[in-house]
Structure formats: structure tokens, C-alpha cells
Image 1: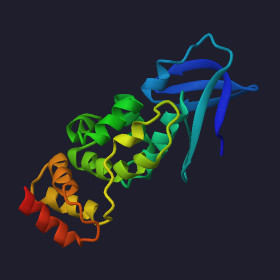
Image 2: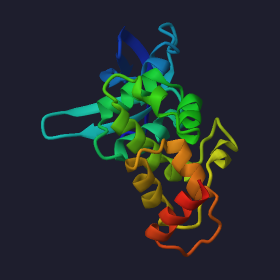
Image 3: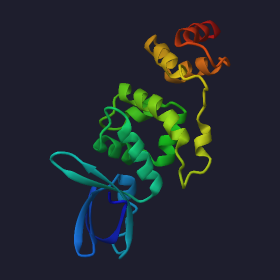
Image 4: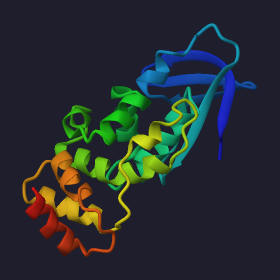
Length: 197
């Protein structure tokens, strides 16, 4: 795995950068947030990289910060989100904006990203809330504390069930987070959440 590359930028053509390292030119795809921060004149541009290997291609993705790389890796772990969609998300939202978007459950803002529909946005929010709370980000200390933690593993299924009944993500999360008992089944959580509404 190639963790990072340091070299000279030979050419820039959004979203691709050609970085020369030791006489070898690496084609690296970058989110626009990284792309516009790169300095053409710099002899030693450092990009944190992720290598994606598929049957027909080996693609390098580059990021100006470790946080961007970490978030990118979390995004591509979500079912239905590939590297190109993850790149589009990071081009549309900065790391802090994306974390804020996930923690405040703003599916509408996420859905404005090209290639992301409302359904995928909701899926991203549900799957990433827990993961991002465990992620240690270098440039964003303490930001992970924003996520509401529920001790009950059934709470995610309860929230999804409430969403399928027509409740908004934020509303469903609020309803379930009011329940303090930790050992309830998904069904009991839903029933209590509906009673407390």
C-alpha cells in the first residue's frame, strides 16, 4: 500500500494531479478541497494516498490532510458508496462540514452532492454516526464528542423503522435517544418511542 507521496506537481487537471516522485509520474485523483490547496511551484508537495485496486484499474486517490484520507476510507466502507462518490462528497463538503452534517443528520445537504440521493444520504448518516465517533481525527480534536451515543445496539434498527414509518432522521433519533433503558428489544424501543412522541 502507498501511504503518501512527496514530489513535484507536473500538471493539474481537475480532479487529477500528476505528481513526479523520483522520476516517476503518479496520476492521483483528489477531491476539489485538496486540489485547490495544491501549490504548483512547490518542489515537495505531500499527499496522503489511498490505492484502490480493481480488476481493470489501480487508482491512486490523494488528500492534503490525514483527516480527509480517514474520512474517505470510512465513506467507501459504506455499501453503495464507491471511491468516485466518496471523492464527490469530499469535493462538495469539507471534513468539518461533513462531520457536522452527519452529527446534525442533515440528509438534505448530503443529498445535494452529485451522485447522492436522499436514500443514500440517510444510509450514510446511519452508518457513519457510530464510526465517526470512534475515528481519531488529527485536525478536529474533540469533534467526535458531538455524536450522541446510545448504549442499546437495537437503537439503530428502531431509528430505521421509525424512518420507514415517515419520521425524519433527526426526529426518529431524538425519540429513541429519550429512552434511557439499555436492554430493550427493537420492538419495545419503537413502541416506547411512539408513546413518548
